Image 1 (cartoon, helix red, strand yellow):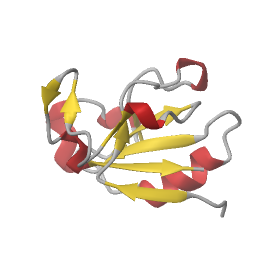
Image 2: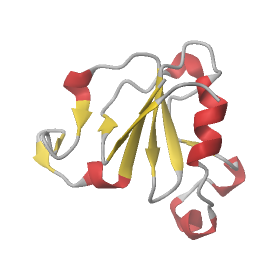
Image 3: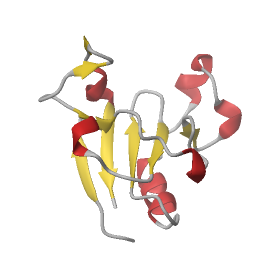
Length: 105
């Protein structure tokens, strides 16, 4: 397994890399895409870390623990991080960071 850093209750806003096949959320089972299927998805953070840490150009992921999806990042920009210290999203107060985990490879 590769080396990585896990930052709980944090994610990187934007920066989702289209060239990595991540212009939207990635699910373990793509047939379970859609809001009405959230309860059927399983936790796959360790699998996502293993899978995407090996993907060339992927330097990190944001894992959504509520709907069990992943956003891929080709660069890490701390100015775009959202966590308890920067709890805003698109200029408005948000607790969205509480549902996410930022993993840096």
